[in-house]
Amino acid sequence: MDDPIKVNEKELMDYYGYKGSFGNFKMKIKFLKSWILHSIAYSSPHSEFTAKIQRSRGVNIGENCHFSPYVLLDLVYPKLVNIEDNVTFGSNVMVYAHNNPTANLFLKNGEFPRKVAEVNIKSGAVLFPGAIVTAGVTIGENSIISVGSVVTQDIPDYCVVVGNPGRVIKKIDH
Image 1 (cartoon, rainbow, N blue to C red):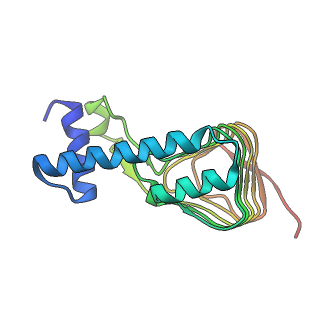
Image 2 (tube, rainbow, N blue to C red):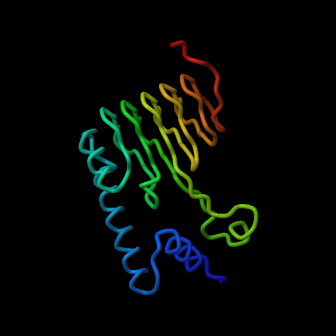
């Protein structure tokens, strides 16, 4: 296939187990519902409401989590985002359970295929505004991800992370 849109649709249909025209329609309805729910949660100033709406999308969210407005949790694979108890999200945090060179078949079919993997954010983690967490990453318990950091690999428990790419600069005494 030379059409990137068809290649991406096939990848998603294979992942979700959909087949044929009706499966394609069901998949599009699924994503439309997820996008509508996300859009409602995205700009809500009420943290508990945001958590409830994100749970209805399939995101696994523990108790007592705080969501500032404008948090983006993966729109395509929400069930792969796992958030434990007492996690704090600053505004404009982004969490992705996939990466994908969608329009570039040269990269997609070469060394950079679609990656789909769980993201786990353990209890007590704090993600400051603008932090980005990529597919397959685990953020450790009570770790702090500083403003604008891009986390591309696992972070141990009780650490402070800064930068792009994110790196541990300090262990937190406990």
